[in-house]
Image (cartoon, rainbow over all chains, first blue to last red; front, side):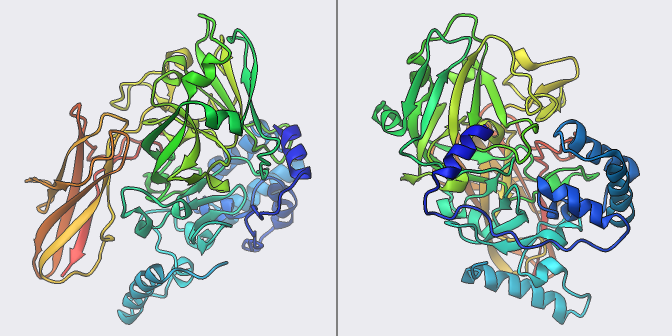
Length: 93
Length: 408
Protein backbone atom coordinates (compact mmCIF):
# COMPACT_ATOMS: atom_id res chain seq x y z
CA UNK A 1 0.00 0.00 0.00
CA UNK A 2 2.62 2.44 -1.13
CA UNK A 3 0.14 5.17 -1.99
CA UNK A 4 -1.43 4.94 1.40
CA UNK A 5 1.96 4.94 3.05
CA UNK A 6 3.01 8.12 1.28
CA UNK A 7 -0.23 9.82 2.26
CA UNK A 8 0.24 8.88 5.87
CA UNK A 9 3.89 9.83 5.97
CA UNK A 10 2.94 13.22 4.54
CA UNK A 11 0.60 13.69 7.48
CA UNK A 12 3.29 12.60 9.92
CA UNK A 13 2.63 12.79 13.59
CA UNK A 14 5.34 13.69 16.06
CA UNK A 15 6.40 10.28 17.40
CA UNK A 16 9.68 9.09 15.90
CA UNK A 17 9.02 5.57 14.72
CA UNK A 18 11.94 4.60 12.58
CA UNK A 19 14.88 2.62 13.84
CA UNK A 20 18.02 4.71 14.10
CA UNK A 21 20.07 2.83 11.59
CA UNK A 22 23.81 2.93 12.00
CA UNK A 23 26.02 2.27 8.99
CA UNK A 24 26.91 -1.41 8.58
CA UNK A 25 30.53 -1.88 7.68
CA UNK A 26 30.89 -4.98 5.56
CA UNK A 27 34.25 -6.64 5.04
CA UNK A 28 36.31 -5.20 2.16
CA UNK A 29 36.49 -7.06 -1.12
CA UNK A 30 35.92 -6.67 -4.85
CA UNK A 31 32.27 -5.83 -5.50
CA UNK A 32 31.57 -4.23 -2.13
CA UNK A 33 30.75 -0.97 -3.93
CA UNK A 34 28.05 -2.77 -5.94
CA UNK A 35 26.61 -4.32 -2.77
CA UNK A 36 26.45 -0.93 -1.10
CA UNK A 37 24.99 0.72 -4.19
CA UNK A 38 22.22 -1.83 -4.75
CA UNK A 39 21.27 -3.86 -1.69
CA UNK A 40 20.65 -1.17 0.89
CA UNK A 41 17.96 0.52 -1.15
CA UNK A 42 15.58 -2.10 0.26
CA UNK A 43 17.25 -3.51 3.36
CA UNK A 44 20.06 -2.83 5.77
CA UNK A 45 23.31 -4.66 5.12
CA UNK A 46 23.17 -6.54 8.43
CA UNK A 47 21.05 -9.10 6.53
CA UNK A 48 24.26 -10.15 4.80
CA UNK A 49 26.27 -10.54 8.01
CA UNK A 50 23.42 -12.44 9.67
CA UNK A 51 23.16 -14.92 6.77
CA UNK A 52 26.79 -15.91 6.92
CA UNK A 53 28.92 -17.84 6.51
CA UNK A 54 26.80 -20.83 5.56
CA UNK A 55 25.76 -20.14 1.94
CA UNK A 56 27.92 -21.45 -0.88
CA UNK A 57 28.07 -19.97 -4.39
CA UNK A 58 24.78 -21.63 -5.36
CA UNK A 59 23.15 -20.38 -2.17
CA UNK A 60 24.21 -16.75 -2.70
CA UNK A 61 23.26 -17.06 -6.37
CA UNK A 62 19.76 -18.13 -5.40
CA UNK A 63 19.51 -15.38 -2.81
CA UNK A 64 20.46 -12.59 -5.21
CA UNK A 65 18.17 -14.08 -7.87
CA UNK A 66 15.33 -14.07 -5.33
CA UNK A 67 15.93 -10.37 -4.70
CA UNK A 68 15.72 -9.68 -8.43
CA UNK A 69 12.97 -12.10 -9.48
CA UNK A 70 10.68 -12.30 -6.44
CA UNK A 71 11.28 -8.90 -4.88
CA UNK A 72 11.90 -7.05 -8.17
CA UNK A 73 15.11 -5.37 -7.06
CA UNK A 74 16.31 -3.24 -10.01
CA UNK A 75 19.82 -4.68 -10.24
CA UNK A 76 21.49 -4.97 -13.63
CA UNK A 77 23.22 -8.15 -14.73
CA UNK A 78 26.79 -6.93 -14.32
CA UNK A 79 26.13 -5.66 -10.81
CA UNK A 80 24.29 -8.88 -9.89
CA UNK A 81 27.35 -10.90 -10.91
CA UNK A 82 29.69 -8.67 -8.93
CA UNK A 83 27.40 -8.91 -5.89
CA UNK A 84 27.18 -12.71 -6.09
CA UNK A 85 30.96 -12.99 -6.40
CA UNK A 86 31.55 -10.67 -3.46
CA UNK A 87 29.04 -12.49 -1.23
CA UNK A 88 30.40 -15.92 -2.11
CA UNK A 89 34.01 -14.89 -1.58
CA UNK A 90 33.60 -12.75 1.52
CA UNK A 91 30.44 -14.08 3.21
CA UNK A 92 30.20 -17.60 1.78
CA UNK A 93 31.40 -20.98 2.89
CA UNK B 1 20.96 3.30 21.51
CA UNK B 2 19.49 3.43 24.97
CA UNK B 3 21.27 1.92 27.90
CA UNK B 4 20.76 -1.73 28.61
CA UNK B 5 18.58 -2.45 31.55
CA UNK B 6 20.35 -3.56 34.66
CA UNK B 7 19.36 -7.20 34.83
CA UNK B 8 20.44 -7.74 31.26
CA UNK B 9 23.74 -6.01 31.83
CA UNK B 10 24.41 -8.16 34.88
CA UNK B 11 23.68 -11.42 33.13
CA UNK B 12 25.67 -10.60 30.02
CA UNK B 13 28.64 -9.18 31.85
CA UNK B 14 28.75 -12.28 34.04
CA UNK B 15 28.74 -14.53 31.00
CA UNK B 16 31.36 -12.45 29.26
CA UNK B 17 33.68 -12.29 32.25
CA UNK B 18 33.32 -16.02 32.87
CA UNK B 19 34.54 -16.64 29.34
CA UNK B 20 37.39 -14.19 29.73
CA UNK B 21 38.53 -15.32 33.17
CA UNK B 22 38.71 -18.82 31.82
CA UNK B 23 41.19 -17.42 29.31
CA UNK B 24 39.68 -19.70 26.70
CA UNK B 25 38.97 -17.20 23.98
CA UNK B 26 38.34 -13.60 23.05
CA UNK B 27 34.77 -12.32 23.41
CA UNK B 28 32.78 -12.30 20.19
CA UNK B 29 31.59 -9.00 18.76
CA UNK B 30 28.09 -9.71 20.07
CA UNK B 31 29.34 -10.50 23.56
CA UNK B 32 31.40 -7.34 23.51
CA UNK B 33 28.18 -5.51 22.57
CA UNK B 34 26.35 -7.09 25.51
CA UNK B 35 24.25 -9.54 23.52
CA UNK B 36 23.56 -13.08 24.69
CA UNK B 37 22.95 -14.94 21.47
CA UNK B 38 21.27 -18.30 21.43
CA UNK B 39 23.98 -20.95 21.01
CA UNK B 40 23.82 -22.45 17.52
CA UNK B 41 22.83 -19.42 15.44
CA UNK B 42 25.06 -18.64 12.44
CA UNK B 43 28.35 -17.09 13.52
CA UNK B 44 27.67 -14.09 11.28
CA UNK B 45 24.92 -13.01 13.67
CA UNK B 46 27.74 -12.08 16.01
CA UNK B 47 28.56 -9.20 13.68
CA UNK B 48 25.02 -7.89 13.23
CA UNK B 49 23.40 -8.38 16.62
CA UNK B 50 23.42 -5.55 19.14
CA UNK B 51 21.15 -4.62 22.01
CA UNK B 52 19.13 -1.67 20.80
CA UNK B 53 15.94 0.05 21.91
CA UNK B 54 13.46 1.07 19.24
CA UNK B 55 11.27 4.06 20.14
CA UNK B 56 8.88 2.90 22.85
CA UNK B 57 10.76 -0.34 23.45
CA UNK B 58 13.31 -1.65 25.91
CA UNK B 59 16.53 -2.92 24.34
CA UNK B 60 15.91 -5.94 22.14
CA UNK B 61 18.40 -8.00 20.15
CA UNK B 62 18.68 -6.15 16.85
CA UNK B 63 19.11 -8.64 14.03
CA UNK B 64 18.32 -6.21 11.20
CA UNK B 65 17.61 -2.48 11.16
CA UNK B 66 15.57 -2.26 7.98
CA UNK B 67 13.10 -3.83 7.85
CA UNK B 68 13.30 -3.95 11.65
CA UNK B 69 13.72 -7.42 13.13
CA UNK B 70 14.39 -7.40 16.85
CA UNK B 71 14.11 -10.41 19.13
CA UNK B 72 13.45 -10.66 22.84
CA UNK B 73 16.33 -11.75 25.07
CA UNK B 74 15.54 -14.73 27.29
CA UNK B 75 14.98 -12.47 30.31
CA UNK B 76 11.89 -10.95 28.69
CA UNK B 77 10.20 -14.35 28.37
CA UNK B 78 10.00 -15.20 32.08
CA UNK B 79 6.43 -13.99 32.59
CA UNK B 80 3.28 -15.52 31.04
CA UNK B 81 2.36 -12.07 29.73
CA UNK B 82 5.11 -10.30 27.80
CA UNK B 83 5.13 -6.55 28.49
CA UNK B 84 4.50 -4.38 25.42
CA UNK B 85 7.90 -2.71 25.57
CA UNK B 86 9.63 -6.12 25.69
CA UNK B 87 7.66 -7.66 22.81
CA UNK B 88 9.65 -8.70 19.73
CA UNK B 89 9.41 -6.85 16.40
CA UNK B 90 9.18 -8.41 12.95
CA UNK B 91 8.65 -6.73 9.56
CA UNK B 92 9.06 -7.88 5.97
CA UNK B 93 9.03 -4.51 4.24
CA UNK B 94 10.76 -1.33 5.24
CA UNK B 95 8.25 1.44 4.51
CA UNK B 96 6.47 1.59 7.87
CA UNK B 97 4.26 4.65 8.27
CA UNK B 98 3.21 6.32 11.49
CA UNK B 99 -0.49 5.78 11.20
CA UNK B 100 -2.61 8.84 11.98
CA UNK B 101 -5.69 7.67 13.89
CA UNK B 102 -7.66 10.70 12.69
CA UNK B 103 -7.59 9.47 9.10
CA UNK B 104 -7.16 5.75 9.78
CA UNK B 105 -9.81 3.37 8.50
CA UNK B 106 -10.13 -0.26 7.51
CA UNK B 107 -11.65 -0.92 4.08
CA UNK B 108 -13.79 -4.07 4.18
CA UNK B 109 -14.91 -5.64 0.91
CA UNK B 110 -13.62 -8.01 -1.76
CA UNK B 111 -15.31 -10.02 -4.50
CA UNK B 112 -16.75 -12.38 -1.89
CA UNK B 113 -18.48 -9.61 0.04
CA UNK B 114 -22.06 -8.51 -0.54
CA UNK B 115 -21.11 -4.89 0.07
CA UNK B 116 -18.32 -2.61 1.19
CA UNK B 117 -17.64 -0.76 4.40
CA UNK B 118 -15.09 1.55 5.96
CA UNK B 119 -14.47 1.22 9.65
CA UNK B 120 -12.71 3.90 11.68
CA UNK B 121 -10.84 3.13 14.89
CA UNK B 122 -13.70 4.65 16.91
CA UNK B 123 -16.22 2.47 15.11
CA UNK B 124 -14.09 -0.61 15.71
CA UNK B 125 -13.93 0.21 19.42
CA UNK B 126 -17.73 0.59 19.59
CA UNK B 127 -18.27 -2.96 18.39
CA UNK B 128 -18.68 -5.76 20.99
CA UNK B 129 -15.22 -6.23 22.51
CA UNK B 130 -13.58 -9.52 23.32
CA UNK B 131 -10.24 -10.39 24.92
CA UNK B 132 -7.97 -13.30 24.22
CA UNK B 133 -4.58 -14.14 25.71
CA UNK B 134 -2.53 -15.55 22.87
CA UNK B 135 1.05 -16.31 21.91
CA UNK B 136 2.34 -14.51 18.85
CA UNK B 137 5.27 -16.46 17.47
CA UNK B 138 7.06 -15.86 14.20
CA UNK B 139 6.89 -18.88 11.90
CA UNK B 140 10.67 -18.77 11.76
CA UNK B 141 11.38 -18.52 15.47
CA UNK B 142 14.56 -20.59 16.09
CA UNK B 143 15.39 -20.55 12.37
CA UNK B 144 18.95 -19.74 13.39
CA UNK B 145 19.17 -23.20 14.99
CA UNK B 146 18.35 -25.06 11.78
CA UNK B 147 20.90 -27.69 10.76
CA UNK B 148 21.97 -27.02 8.12
CA UNK B 149 21.42 -23.27 8.39
CA UNK B 150 18.85 -21.81 6.03
CA UNK B 151 18.54 -18.27 4.70
CA UNK B 152 16.29 -15.74 6.43
CA UNK B 153 16.15 -13.77 9.66
CA UNK B 154 18.32 -15.86 11.95
CA UNK B 155 16.16 -15.89 15.06
CA UNK B 156 17.19 -17.56 18.29
CA UNK B 157 14.48 -18.27 20.86
CA UNK B 158 12.98 -14.80 21.16
CA UNK B 159 10.74 -14.20 18.11
CA UNK B 160 7.69 -14.67 20.29
CA UNK B 161 5.66 -13.21 23.11
CA UNK B 162 2.28 -13.61 24.75
CA UNK B 163 -0.19 -10.77 25.29
CA UNK B 164 -3.79 -10.09 26.25
CA UNK B 165 -5.33 -8.79 23.04
CA UNK B 166 -8.61 -6.85 22.98
CA UNK B 167 -10.63 -6.05 19.93
CA UNK B 168 -13.69 -6.78 17.83
CA UNK B 169 -14.35 -10.22 16.41
CA UNK B 170 -13.32 -10.46 12.76
CA UNK B 171 -16.63 -12.26 12.22
CA UNK B 172 -18.51 -9.15 13.40
CA UNK B 173 -16.43 -6.97 11.07
CA UNK B 174 -17.25 -9.28 8.16
CA UNK B 175 -20.94 -9.22 9.11
CA UNK B 176 -20.95 -5.51 8.26
CA UNK B 177 -20.57 -6.43 4.58
CA UNK B 178 -21.92 -9.98 4.52
CA UNK B 179 -20.16 -12.91 2.87
CA UNK B 180 -21.25 -14.65 -0.30
CA UNK B 181 -21.30 -18.42 -0.04
CA UNK B 182 -18.46 -18.57 -2.60
CA UNK B 183 -16.03 -16.91 -0.17
CA UNK B 184 -13.10 -19.23 0.55
CA UNK B 185 -10.46 -16.96 2.10
CA UNK B 186 -10.26 -13.66 3.95
CA UNK B 187 -7.30 -11.48 2.92
CA UNK B 188 -5.53 -8.75 4.91
CA UNK B 189 -3.29 -5.85 4.02
CA UNK B 190 -1.43 -3.52 6.36
CA UNK B 191 -0.22 0.05 5.95
CA UNK B 192 3.41 -1.03 5.73
CA UNK B 193 4.77 -1.37 2.25
CA UNK B 194 7.91 -2.02 0.21
CA UNK B 195 10.78 0.35 -0.48
CA UNK B 196 10.54 -0.45 -4.20
CA UNK B 197 7.05 -0.22 -5.72
CA UNK B 198 7.29 -3.54 -7.57
CA UNK B 199 8.21 -5.57 -4.50
CA UNK B 200 5.16 -7.66 -3.55
CA UNK B 201 3.18 -5.97 -0.80
CA UNK B 202 2.79 -8.05 2.35
CA UNK B 203 -0.72 -9.42 1.90
CA UNK B 204 -1.91 -12.58 3.64
CA UNK B 205 -5.07 -14.63 3.73
CA UNK B 206 -6.62 -17.23 6.03
CA UNK B 207 -9.37 -19.77 5.34
CA UNK B 208 -12.86 -18.41 5.91
CA UNK B 209 -13.49 -20.97 8.68
CA UNK B 210 -10.55 -19.59 10.65
CA UNK B 211 -11.60 -16.00 9.96
CA UNK B 212 -15.06 -16.49 11.47
CA UNK B 213 -13.71 -18.40 14.50
CA UNK B 214 -14.83 -16.59 17.65
CA UNK B 215 -11.20 -16.20 18.79
CA UNK B 216 -10.01 -14.40 15.64
CA UNK B 217 -10.16 -10.66 16.29
CA UNK B 218 -9.15 -7.24 15.04
CA UNK B 219 -7.24 -5.99 18.08
CA UNK B 220 -6.67 -2.39 19.11
CA UNK B 221 -5.37 -3.08 22.63
CA UNK B 222 -2.44 -5.12 23.86
CA UNK B 223 -2.18 -5.72 27.60
CA UNK B 224 -4.61 -2.89 28.31
CA UNK B 225 -2.76 -0.33 26.21
CA UNK B 226 -2.95 0.80 22.59
CA UNK B 227 -0.79 -1.44 20.40
CA UNK B 228 2.82 -0.23 20.26
CA UNK B 229 3.71 1.23 16.86
CA UNK B 230 6.09 -1.66 16.18
CA UNK B 231 3.44 -4.24 17.03
CA UNK B 232 0.80 -2.90 14.66
CA UNK B 233 -0.75 0.35 15.93
CA UNK B 234 -3.59 1.15 15.74
CA UNK B 235 -5.08 -2.28 14.92
CA UNK B 236 -3.87 -5.70 13.86
CA UNK B 237 -5.34 -9.09 13.08
CA UNK B 238 -5.04 -11.69 15.86
CA UNK B 239 -5.19 -15.32 14.72
CA UNK B 240 -4.79 -17.27 17.97
CA UNK B 241 -2.98 -20.57 17.58
CA UNK B 242 -1.56 -19.73 14.17
CA UNK B 243 1.92 -18.38 13.53
CA UNK B 244 2.53 -14.63 13.38
CA UNK B 245 2.62 -14.35 9.59
CA UNK B 246 -1.17 -13.98 9.49
CA UNK B 247 -1.37 -11.38 12.27
CA UNK B 248 -1.28 -8.41 9.89
CA UNK B 249 -0.16 -5.20 11.58
CA UNK B 250 -1.55 -1.70 10.89
CA UNK B 251 -4.44 -3.44 9.08
CA UNK B 252 -6.09 -1.21 6.48
CA UNK B 253 -7.89 -3.72 4.25
CA UNK B 254 -9.93 -6.87 4.90
CA UNK B 255 -11.16 -8.65 1.78
CA UNK B 256 -13.49 -11.59 1.28
CA UNK B 257 -12.02 -13.67 -1.55
CA UNK B 258 -13.67 -16.21 -3.85
CA UNK B 259 -10.30 -17.22 -5.31
CA UNK B 260 -7.10 -18.14 -3.46
CA UNK B 261 -4.72 -15.26 -2.73
CA UNK B 262 -1.71 -15.98 -4.93
CA UNK B 263 0.91 -13.35 -4.13
CA UNK B 264 4.53 -14.17 -3.20
CA UNK B 265 3.84 -14.12 0.56
CA UNK B 266 1.27 -16.93 0.22
CA UNK B 267 3.23 -18.95 -2.31
CA UNK B 268 6.12 -19.77 -2.31
CA UNK B 269 6.70 -17.93 1.01
CA UNK B 270 5.49 -19.29 4.34
CA UNK B 271 5.06 -22.84 3.09
CA UNK B 272 5.90 -26.16 4.69
CA UNK B 273 6.29 -29.54 3.01
CA UNK B 274 3.02 -31.50 2.97
CA UNK B 275 2.81 -34.23 5.60
CA UNK B 276 6.01 -33.45 7.49
CA UNK B 277 4.49 -31.98 10.63
CA UNK B 278 1.77 -33.40 12.90
CA UNK B 279 -0.69 -30.56 12.26
CA UNK B 280 -4.49 -30.61 12.33
CA UNK B 281 -5.43 -27.29 10.73
CA UNK B 282 -5.43 -27.42 6.97
CA UNK B 283 -5.56 -24.53 4.51
CA UNK B 284 -7.06 -26.57 1.72
CA UNK B 285 -7.65 -23.80 -0.84
CA UNK B 286 -3.89 -23.14 -0.81
CA UNK B 287 -2.56 -26.69 -0.73
CA UNK B 288 -0.70 -28.27 -3.63
CA UNK B 289 0.97 -31.64 -4.07
CA UNK B 290 4.16 -30.69 -2.26
CA UNK B 291 3.59 -27.63 -0.06
CA UNK B 292 0.93 -26.07 2.12
CA UNK B 293 0.81 -22.79 4.05
CA UNK B 294 2.05 -22.88 7.61
CA UNK B 295 -0.94 -22.98 10.00
CA UNK B 296 -1.03 -23.61 13.74
CA UNK B 297 2.03 -23.59 15.96
CA UNK B 298 3.52 -26.92 16.96
CA UNK B 299 3.63 -27.76 20.67
CA UNK B 300 6.77 -26.32 22.20
CA UNK B 301 8.53 -25.24 25.38
CA UNK B 302 11.40 -23.01 26.41
CA UNK B 303 13.59 -22.99 29.49
CA UNK B 304 13.69 -19.33 30.52
CA UNK B 305 15.31 -19.56 33.95
CA UNK B 306 18.74 -20.71 32.78
CA UNK B 307 20.91 -20.59 29.69
CA UNK B 308 22.81 -23.59 28.44
CA UNK B 309 26.00 -23.83 30.48
CA UNK B 310 24.69 -21.71 33.38
CA UNK B 311 26.48 -22.04 36.72
CA UNK B 312 24.36 -23.28 39.61
CA UNK B 313 25.02 -24.34 43.20
CA UNK B 314 24.79 -27.98 44.15
CA UNK B 315 21.48 -28.98 45.73
CA UNK B 316 18.02 -27.72 44.91
CA UNK B 317 17.73 -25.77 41.66
CA UNK B 318 14.39 -24.59 40.26
CA UNK B 319 14.27 -24.66 36.47
CA UNK B 320 11.31 -22.88 34.89
CA UNK B 321 9.97 -21.74 31.58
CA UNK B 322 7.01 -21.54 29.25
CA UNK B 323 5.07 -24.03 27.12
CA UNK B 324 2.57 -23.34 24.34
CA UNK B 325 0.91 -24.90 21.31
CA UNK B 326 -1.50 -24.22 18.48
CA UNK B 327 -4.56 -23.74 20.65
CA UNK B 328 -5.37 -27.06 22.30
CA UNK B 329 -3.70 -26.06 25.54
CA UNK B 330 -0.83 -27.63 27.45
CA UNK B 331 -1.60 -30.84 29.33
CA UNK B 332 1.83 -31.64 30.74
CA UNK B 333 5.44 -30.55 30.79
CA UNK B 334 8.00 -33.20 31.66
CA UNK B 335 11.65 -32.88 32.57
CA UNK B 336 14.44 -35.44 32.24
CA UNK B 337 17.74 -35.14 34.07
CA UNK B 338 19.22 -38.35 32.64
CA UNK B 339 19.32 -37.53 28.96
CA UNK B 340 15.76 -38.66 28.21
CA UNK B 341 15.74 -42.09 29.85
CA UNK B 342 13.25 -41.14 32.57
CA UNK B 343 10.86 -38.20 32.80
CA UNK B 344 9.12 -36.48 35.71
CA UNK B 345 6.22 -34.03 35.62
CA UNK B 346 6.92 -30.33 36.03
CA UNK B 347 4.46 -28.18 37.98
CA UNK B 348 2.23 -26.15 35.69
CA UNK B 349 1.51 -22.51 36.56
CA UNK B 350 -1.41 -20.21 35.91
CA UNK B 351 -3.68 -21.17 33.00
CA UNK B 352 -4.49 -18.02 31.02
CA UNK B 353 -6.28 -19.95 28.30
CA UNK B 354 -5.55 -22.47 25.61
CA UNK B 355 -3.71 -19.98 23.36
CA UNK B 356 -1.45 -18.59 26.11
CA UNK B 357 2.02 -19.28 27.45
CA UNK B 358 1.71 -21.90 30.20
CA UNK B 359 4.38 -21.39 32.85
CA UNK B 360 6.02 -24.47 34.36
CA UNK B 361 8.70 -25.15 36.94
CA UNK B 362 10.70 -28.12 38.14
CA UNK B 363 12.93 -28.66 41.16
CA UNK B 364 16.01 -30.75 40.60
CA UNK B 365 18.94 -31.68 42.76
CA UNK B 366 22.14 -30.52 41.10
CA UNK B 367 25.24 -32.60 41.64
CA UNK B 368 28.79 -31.32 41.33
CA UNK B 369 29.76 -31.10 37.67
CA UNK B 370 27.45 -31.22 34.69
CA UNK B 371 23.68 -31.62 35.02
CA UNK B 372 21.59 -32.34 31.94
CA UNK B 373 18.07 -30.86 31.74
CA UNK B 374 15.68 -31.84 28.96
CA UNK B 375 12.11 -30.56 28.62
CA UNK B 376 9.16 -31.90 26.65
CA UNK B 377 5.67 -30.38 26.53
CA UNK B 378 2.51 -32.30 25.60
CA UNK B 379 -0.74 -30.68 24.58
CA UNK B 380 -4.32 -31.75 25.28
CA UNK B 381 -4.57 -33.84 22.12
CA UNK B 382 -1.41 -35.74 22.99
CA UNK B 383 1.05 -34.03 20.65
CA UNK B 384 4.56 -33.71 22.08
CA UNK B 385 7.81 -32.08 20.98
CA UNK B 386 10.24 -33.70 18.58
CA UNK B 387 13.61 -35.05 19.62
CA UNK B 388 15.11 -34.63 16.14
CA UNK B 389 14.82 -31.49 14.02
CA UNK B 390 12.19 -31.77 11.28
CA UNK B 391 14.22 -30.00 8.63
CA UNK B 392 12.41 -27.80 6.12
CA UNK B 393 13.88 -25.24 3.71
CA UNK B 394 12.52 -22.17 5.50
CA UNK B 395 13.38 -23.29 9.02
CA UNK B 396 9.82 -23.23 10.37
CA UNK B 397 8.23 -25.10 13.30
CA UNK B 398 11.41 -25.84 15.25
CA UNK B 399 10.14 -27.57 18.39
CA UNK B 400 13.15 -29.73 19.15
CA UNK B 401 13.28 -30.52 22.88
CA UNK B 402 15.92 -28.43 24.56
CA UNK B 403 18.74 -30.24 26.31
CA UNK B 404 20.80 -27.82 28.38
CA UNK B 405 23.64 -28.34 30.81
CA UNK B 406 23.76 -26.71 34.22
CA UNK B 407 27.22 -26.67 35.80
CA UNK B 408 27.46 -26.96 39.58
